[in-house]
Image (tube, rainbow over the protein chains, first blue to last red):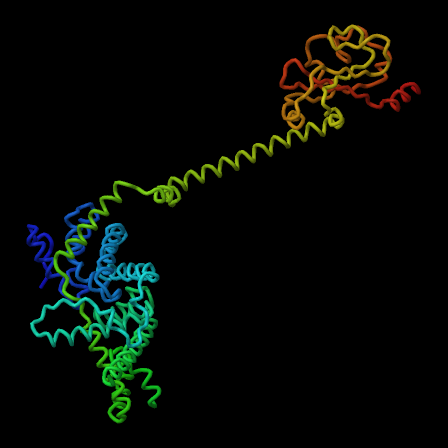
Length: 224
Length: 254
């Protein structure tokens, strides 16, 4: 699935199909590398349609990753926009033997870090919170029929979002890439340009903090 | 392994990030230790929560908006190059800059080499004419011995004046010229007997065409030095007497 070459895609509609296939979640860092390589080659040569396809192929990943790190849609949108701008700007530097999505993830992590620094003074969203969480609920669209189920999901998402928000940036990026995006430790190390040992240490620390946060939150919930 | 050591490894154990041997050890410990098993369960639970941490489904409009903004920004950036980028562009390492720098360095080295050679030549001049430094005054001096009578030169000495006279040429150097004076001196420093035939114009002291060679002059060997400045009208002529008395004494003896 999703392994069609770009030559096999004659029309824009077919491109969209390919894009939809390629944007499927999962451990797909090495998937469709050939098709992507061709798209990148075309985009580097100045083909705007090819770059549009690259954006379509990777927009869900970039947006999801940004949202998980930044915690809100508005920032995630800004970050995604900046990510694609950087991809466009530095596409010539991308080497064909590299993993494209790993490269995009790296840009995403850098952009999110920059954005967080920028917003540090503007927003208090990512401060460690102790109990009082009523005014910072995440935006949850009510798409499910079962309202109770939706509420539980929203609470869990809220809980994890806040737990992640308490982490230092490097731990946050490591845990999101490893446990949420499903990359291996070595892949995370490559994305973050770090060693596997360092990443393992960051992941261990992050898991401990998240577990502590969840335990404390659940106890508070049980007591109240 | 005790519980404390196991507890440290449990976060990695939950994500299966340990090597096979460590994993086996922990599994064995957990089966025997209820407390560690409970902690491992908590890690597992929080990890499952993390894996459920999916963003809300963003509509296609959101993505289309992002792409549209990206294209808009690309268009803006491609049309207007910011001043900082323009300036930064000059400082980016380029082959042309490297070549230009290398050429500049080569020219500088060559210049320094040539200047060094030139000053060495001037030093030679100074060595040949040790008295010249004395003449570096604000006025150029032409020293004329008293024997010359029929010099048609306007700088000719007056009659009846004994001893070498100094005639001040009415040309005062500019302040900057004082330092540059040695540079402007084109020619020529030579001992009088060799140099005199090269001179032209009015008859001068010590030249073969001297109409009235004084006998006194025979006993005195004169060192003559001519220096032609850049100005063709100004030539510095310097005479010095060599001490030849011991020679004359010897000749008398014979």
